[in-house]
Length: 109
Image (cartoon, rainbow, N blue to C red; front, side, top):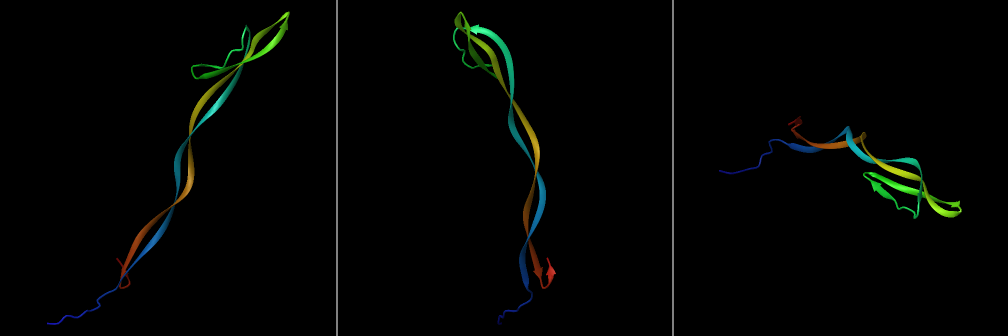
């Protein structure tokens, strides 16, 4: 009994890259600042420092006025409020997907 090698068929394997265009959906977060000016007209002996009222930052604005003697007045407050927002954006992107193509003697498997 003898053995011999016989060629019976051929197989070819190749890869194909497909590109798929999609819109990805992402949420972006941002904060906006809202400024409000309040007229106060309150006399003070020393300049007040900025302070918080809950989520608000209050920044006192002072000026000196001549009234027989100098006195310090808070003439305005600047109120800074943070407003958080999210928005949905669509970003076009191309995704690639690879697949294998196997051919045997001219036929795809």
